[in-house]
Length: 379
Image (cartoon, rainbow, N blue to C red; front, side):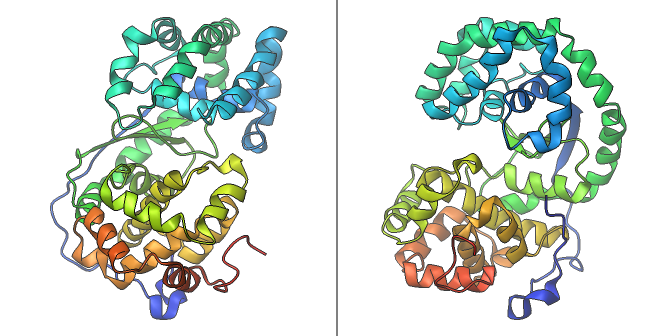
């Protein structure tokens, strides 16, 4: 993961306005940091499935734990992972985490009880959340008996003790983050840059097995690796709380999607990039890239940002061209200083023709420091 901090001088005419010397307003954000055996069990499904995203971090752990499981269970984990992606459910562990994030993540016994009675224990909260998807729920209910058998096998194989052996530093890290995060008022900037009201509480769940993901779940909760430093944690919070940054079924998002669908580049990025990164629909990419543009502004204001050109070059094979363009437009509009309704801003930008391919690509090229005719794929 790219951990470079942003240096304003490196962008010349794109020098970033800083709020460092402004008078500090009252703190709006409250932070809660904790751990979770249940979320760690879900995250560990990626390494156990042999997923290429996870093995660079957890191959030794997966090789140590997998022999404790019966052969039938071991073979069903990659099968479930492939079925989840083919069905449209997506990445198995991260998307299961969303379903179990209504207080059903404490430990493996809680996962088992919840998956044994999903309608009673999971449905209501998931149905009321912004993540509700009827097809995803139908797929999940269909595989619930297999998941129950898998969680029971992990419990019998001693996953709790196995995790505890590897997560000894988590308690210390919780205390460190509780102290360090108190200086970062992320919610105040969320509200300023979106025009929405947020709950002041951000819950950070530290996990042993979730790399490379930071995962937003129900509520204002996100999951991240326990050993990620404070700037990474602040950047994750700046990003994850934004989803969705605008109502994706609203008129502004739909107008933007209609224009982007005619763009010669952006739909090709969606169709041709490696699907392991996600964002396999135009709507999903727009959702993500508005959030990335806003979180870049927030991170800059809080002094924890990466250089935007480097950030978007090194992330997900460079696919976030749209994020760079939206960020450049917001920078031009001095959005970090003015703020307002991001949904109204999006509608106005589309009406003004700023999402038309020629203008969009030119702004992206300036921010991303790439030729306008070679924005993606990266050479």
